[in-house]
Amino acid sequence: MATPARTRIFGSAMTPPGTPPAREAPRVGEHRRGSRVRTTEAGTWFPAVAPDEAPAGLLLVHPGVDLRVLLPVLRTLAELALPGVLPTRAVLVEQAGRTWLVADAPIVPAVSDALVDGPHRDAGCAAAVLTDVGDTLLAAHRAGLVHGGVGAQAVVLGPAGAALLTDWGTLGHGAQASPADDAAGWADLAGLLAERWCPGSPDGAAELTAAGRAARAEGLDSGVDRLRATGAGAPRATLAAVAAARIADPRSPLAAVPPAPATPIGTSGPDTPSEP
Image (cartoon, rainbow, N blue to C red):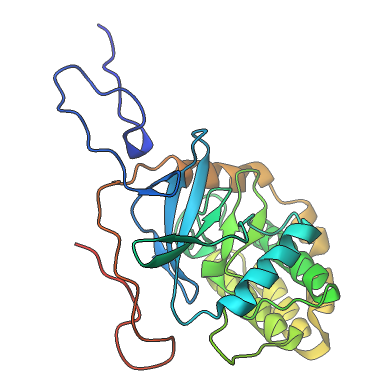
């Protein structure tokens, strides 16, 4: 018996005979938009499909983000072409009174999506992620850039199993950050992965925790160096499989775009968009 055709992400494939035509996915520019997957200080992230059917991402930028800071940071990152940065265009898409950014790569899963269950939860994978993030931050610091918001939501597991930093240049108006702030954020991430990815490995958890302490006390490079050997032996294919499974997860394209929050970050009022 023939297997009926299945609807793929955002309804891009044929549907079984007799199925009513699917509504076209909402668009931002030339990209088809899926349902929101996370809200960060940068804004609200949505998976998307590019005109060539490649997986991509869309960020509905939070109004508290200073665009005069954001765009130059993105341009500099594009020039640096660091392998550990989620590629994001330094061009705003203005549509229906909202401001969007386009990422030319999948924006799922964030590490925050992968804290529970899965074969990737071991000290080797954690060290690999932390080494990727640390090396990217160190290279950015040498170029005069600071991230300022390092955390589990700002790290995406890429299709090749590498960790990619996103949410760059998204500090609020007048806010400042330093390399020491990035080192502290990296140390916090190390502590989180020690707790959530090493539940059965006290030695692995201790190694991550010690690296975090070193980053705070001696500098980020010291913390990263402590994890290089462990991270080098990590099964990247396992991290890649986690990414592939999340990228393939169907998302409804029909949810309304949430209204951009009217109140800047850190003040009273709604700071998380809602959708029906």
